[in-house]
Image (tube, rainbow, N blue to C red):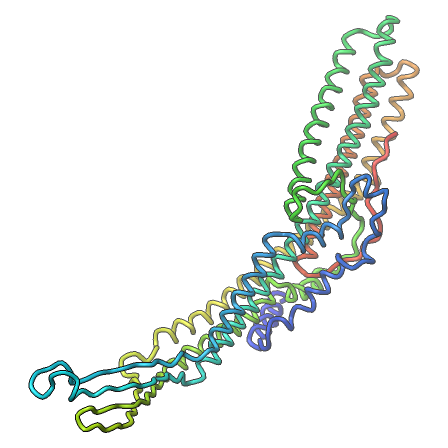
Length: 451
């Protein structure tokens, strides 16, 4: 039932399209304001500058200003505006000179019997074709404007997702370093007990394998972090920007509306909103092709000199093609087919957007459940197990390797939590982009603490 209502409302929206696309950009601009207004993020402090920490709003503002893809889209708008200017211009008049009856034989030798005509010819475009052509290019400019808005929203989404990935890697790196430090402390304690003859030397080799594995993980995380920061700098169009870390933007939990309510928001996104302008464009194209059935009128006015009689006369001519064989039927039919294509493409995009909406919504629900289980059950249980094993090790009930395994299990769950938070936020970002809606959040995701 919901799908039928969505389709009906979408078709009505498509059929009743009118007005320039620029009037529809208000919802897009409001979405931008959520990320670029000065109150969204704290101002840059000297301390943060020194630490080279990049905030989300700073990155988005830089990206909107410097991204080469956006500049390309802006120039596309300028190109169509130039075409609109050209489309509204009348054809230039033609100046012609014609000489007859000269350099012949008999009485027509030389130029004594020649007739010389000087004339100006002007073609008049009928059927309102210039106005319609200009309107079509203006609509093309508006469509290019929607493409620019899509590119801007995509850029904001990619920057935000980049921040979540970098935040996740930063926290993963901190976890790995903390675990490595604890593992090394255990190994130092283990070596003391080996020297005292209380523990087998074999346990030292097994413990060293754990630290070696952690060192490899830390190195891999650093490389991935460096790559992600490089990609972020490319997104914002500042490849030489000095960044060491980014602001943590991972939040839990977001206040997300119900699915049925979200489904009504998708029509304001450029992906679907642009079809109103597309339909207006194809309607104008049909009108333009129909206007071409009316041929252009050509008028000519001139002056003729008859040398034989020394007389001067005026010359006037009018010509109008007769549309018998070519009445532009093929182009009109092609434009009508394009109109049907727009309708089917709109329905296809609507169904795909709806499916993507449900997919993201279900993903978010699943990650919320996972994070609650990790935060309220799995991680506390692992912390308790580690505490029991660590205390038991002091009285000889557990080995140091048991303690290391328990510690590593706890950190693995913490690492899983960090990754799940990043995925949760990535899905929320995509849902916000799809619905052009910024959701409010309740609190930030917890930072693992295993000191």
